[in-house]
Image (cartoon, rainbow, N blue to C red):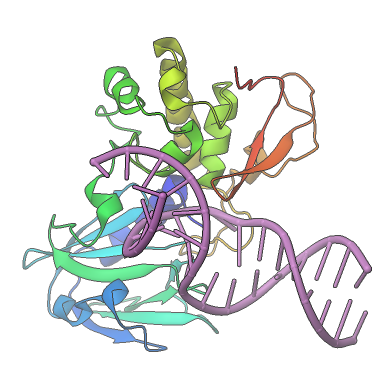
Length: 270
DNA sequence: CTCCCGTCCTGTGGGC
DNA sequence: TGCCCACAGGACGGGA
């Protein structure tokens, strides 16, 4: 479900609420065990010093040199209200006001585990993640270099390696903005084109963060609000509708097993 | 090493 | 109404 703008929106709401509090307990509900929920008891009695984000991962800094890594998968949410169904984990906190965070995850694709801070050997995508798109690290030269691959551009973007945080919606949106066909071999793109793609990614994600992300079905921020970017989407979810640039019918296909939207006129393969 | 595909899991919506 | 299939914001592991 959540891509960078949604996770960033959640992080901003969570940070003031969690920072400075002590983790009193982590309660596994509906018995999630195994590597996806490793070492959670280790968080108990540690104080939360910061709530950070890398790509789509939330990184909760703990006082004894550990890190609570949270990935929401497709359908995960963190909420102060106990969900009626699909509750997986309850985190109990010290202090006044809201003292419980609930991790709701219908499809169970999410994960939550404790690692030594910065040790991401159990999280290969995080370990090899590209630069944050809204940081100085995301520069033209490095991005162009990261695209020297025979792979198709869309699946490469979804790998998180050239740049962090793009998922299925924003990959389609960015490629439409930059007028690049999702199946174009990444290394066939000129420097000028990769520069345009970089610019598209930055502008798109900044606007989406401002809007609080995109709600398609059930995404909600911790305070219960849907994301406002949905009605600003240019191609995603608009198959057969006219392209907003050239009026040609938006096409929907499957690329790398994911629904993929593009304009066959603006985004040519060659 | 890189790339591609299937798989993990549950819910929903469309077609018949 | 009921059933079945396709599809859904992601990441990982295995095989080529």
